[in-house]
Image (cartoon, rainbow, N blue to C red; front, side):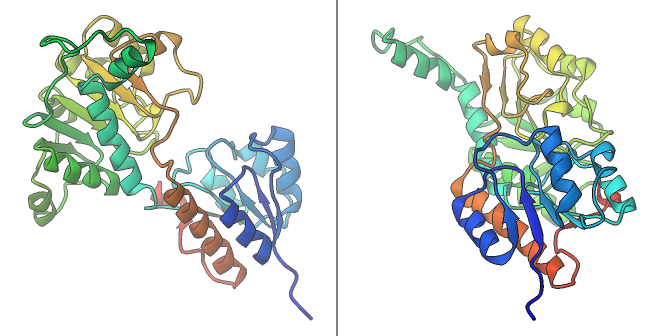
Length: 328
């Protein structure tokens, strides 16, 4: 007699090839549209399914987990970040959590460099001028930006993405510096040509560009607060493709408006899609709608990792990308 298939609920639309493979392997409930599930829909999902496949737009907190049925045994997150999931409570209730690490490394590093160049070379301003028909021709002093070769880049968080950014920046002729919880091995530092700073304050005061590449944890919330932002040079630029909560967005907005910073490139925001309207108005800011990992290849790879985690669990083994509280 064939074994009963796992009941899987997917909270958002995924790439078609991923959804099709899920349908072949499991008893899966897919979304008809790409809107996030309501809190009520999430409660209904966790009450009856074996596996929930959420994304960062879903809040999987203790309250929701408290309403989960006995059948829920795995939360297979579609994405690397799990700060929207109460992993500790899930573990207490015997629910495993998995994620999709390492997929977005190269894509996010590409976007970091794209934002860096967009801000320093004023690309959105030039694009807006062309689209409005205001451009009247080339002029020696028009739309002057800055050369990035020779500038000092300070990377906050030297994990896989930080190191991928370092390699790209070095190819552009930038001088790479970094601050991290743990110093890299000497051979890795040498390979990257990176200078380590134990003091974050000392590093950011000397950088021309600061790139945020650390995760959001209780210890990194507002790590770039008003005091630290004021340590940066007035002609410096800050880029964030990691988590919006790492920067005090209101303080950053004030400094950009007052000319205390030269510019910012942001792909993530402190309050999700609720962006400070004053930030939107600034010409020296480039804002993107969380596109860091948004490549077709990356999204499919993420889906493949979700499938592997669920299939491995279904076969009675530990999901290869299981997340435990001690990792956070």
